[in-house]
Each structure stands twice: as C-alpha cells, then as structure tokens.
Length: 481
Ligand code: GLN
Image (cartoon, rainbow, N blue to C red):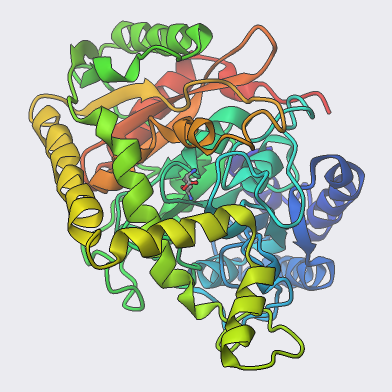
C-alpha cells in the first residue's frame, strides 16, 4: 500500500500502527535475507513508536497524515542512538549522539522507523556492490543489481519492506536506483531539502529526497522534508508550496524538451523506445514535446568525476580513527594510526576517489583539473538555463540500461560511472530531477524516465508525473517475490 492508502486505513481505524509495524517486520524477516536491503533493524524502538502513535490516535491527538506509518532511512542519515554506517566498515560501530534534521522531521511527524538501509560505501557507486555489508539484490530479478548508491532504499520500497524512504543523490543515487527498481525518486533542487544530518560525500552536489511507490507519496514526503533549515548553510530560505495541492493541475500547454544528446550510442533500445512512448503520452495529455540541444552534456561525467572526488577527499578526512571511525588497535606512531585505520576502514572504490580527489586539488594540477571542471560545470548549467527559457521541463531516460547483472561492471570503473550519464548533469546544475516508471524490458525489468525542472520547480515535475501516472499502469506493477 502507498503512504496515502496507509494513512487512510489508519485514519479509519481499519488497521493499527502496531499491526502494520509487526506485518512489516514479518515481511522483512522473510525477504531481507534474499534482498539484503536492511543493515540495521530497530524492532524494539519501532514497536514503541507504533504503540505511541496508536495511543495518540485513540486520544484524538494524531500528529498528521504520516503518523504511525512505518518508514526506513538510507544509512547515510544520522539517527540518534541508532547505528549509522554509511555502508562503510570505518563506521561499522558508529552510534550518532544526536538526531539529524531529516530523521528528526520523520520522528516529529509520528512515523515509525523500521531500520536503516544498505547503500554503496559513502554513497559512491551505481550498483550497491560497493557496500561493505554485501550487495543488495533487485526485487525484480535477484541476479541483478538494484542500482546505487541508494540501492537498499529502492529495493526496500519496490519489495514493500517499508512504506517509503529517503535517499540521497550526488550524481544520480536517488533517481538511478528508483528507475532500476520501478519506483519513484526525486532529487530536489540543491538547497531545497536540508543536508544537515547527512554524512557528506560531495557537499556542492549532495541532496536528499523521497523514494516512494508513486507520485502522490513523493509529494507527501516533500511536504515533510522541504524547507529552510538553519543548520545547513546552503539551505534556501524561500517559501515552500504544498506539493500535494497542485498534483491535479492540467499539463495542457506545458512545453517539454527532449535533448538529442541523451539518445546516444550504447543506450538500450528498449529504454529509448519507452521514453519516446512517454513523450507521445505527454503529447496526448496536452503538452507539447520538441527536440532540444544541451551541447555540453558529454563533459558532465568527466567534470563530475573531478569535482565529486575533490570534495569527497576533503569531507572524508574526518574519518581518521581519531575524530571519527574505526581505530587500528596498536599503531606504532601517529602516521601509522592514520594509515592503518583508514587503510583498513575504507573500501577500494572510496580509496580510489580520495586519491583522485587529492590529486586534482594538489598544486600544479588544481588549475588544469579542478578549476577547469568548475568552468565546465558552469557551461552545463547555462545549457539548462537556456533551454528553460522556452521549456517547462526536460524529458530524458534516467539510466541508459535496465538493471544489469551483479558483477557485470565491478571491474571496470568507467562502465560503472556511465550508469549515471543522464543523472549527473542535474546535480552539476543544482536542478530538480524526478524519476518515474515508464515501462518494462522484455526481461521484465523496470524502465524509468527522468523529468528535469527549473530551480525550485519540483511541483511542475510532480504535476507532470502525476498526470502521466493517472494515464498509465506502470507504477501499479509489483515484483512477484
Ligand atoms: N554513482 C555516482 C557516484 O558513484 C553517483 C553517486 C551518488 O549520487 N551518490 O559517484
């Protein structure tokens, strides 16, 4: 059931939060061994939260629409007294002493936290195979990856092991796994949703957002998490619309651009066809669709793989066995303490990113790599701003292929990096991007499309997504587990 359906059932007292929570744990017990999407379960605290919610309802003191609904969070969100690993051995035993802003928002809304979800280590990856705690499997085909880095989140929603969740997206980590698991994922405008209480990967790109079963649920979670947070210095202090209120507005006359650079060699033909069919559907629904050009698209992946590692190398300096994280037992001196703690704690992909990031920031290379990548970033942003002079939204595939097999790309970083070729540009430009289901491959794997919007125009994307959803059935399909 969706958040909306659960909320109604709870309101009509057809089910209690306690029963719901117990049902979710039963389902998790039977399916999580196969899917491996949960890293930590919070059964004891969850049952208490459920009981408290039922009590509030009995007394007529229900907090809001989400009160009593069981959710989960990607293990990058700081949760007070609950282990937060960020998918890394270096934080295997880290128990945060405070509640991050996102976790707090969910707690204050009366939701029940079932547990913390698997992810690529420090959110670096596109397949969830770089988790220190084993890969997550795609609920649609257990031999396939769920996407990454929010692979546990996408799989948990697709397999209904939680009602909805939050992921984070630095280069595609909400949208790409949402697309590969057949769920909805929204990366909001940079600054729209707080980054406070989020373990930082690349601070100028990171953004948290909902991963849900449908567009209405996505809008409901945006209503909860969007808005100014004084604890995040890049948080935008601007009014927030009611995201559910505008879903029903007509899309007649809206102008959608399809960038020709996004239909490249190597893109799966079934993906291309599904997105083209979605474009036709939008035309039937009254929007106009035209081809556009975003000429600097091909530089997005190389620019990202300089900027993101550069920021990561700085952010991850705090995991040194002194301030945070695993500490080697008997170092002979301070240098060895750092080397052994970090060497043991970080996996290969994270280590490679730190090395690349340190390199591109070092004297002599800073101008030719880092500064150049920043200039390219501006060009990419300008491409979008130009396009948005004449268009309301941009339609693209989310991922160039449906889910691939486990092990298929782990030996080839470039192949893996290209999984995010269509999602990275929106992060570089700070724009909102929504992924929603738009088809299935002949192998039965979900295909997703991406709608990119103007800064702070999440409601336009949700409106387009909702209208499409009303006219199609893709979002109603569930994996046969
Ligand atoms: N797959 C990309 C990377 O590995 C994006 C990850 C993300 O968005 N967190 O960096």
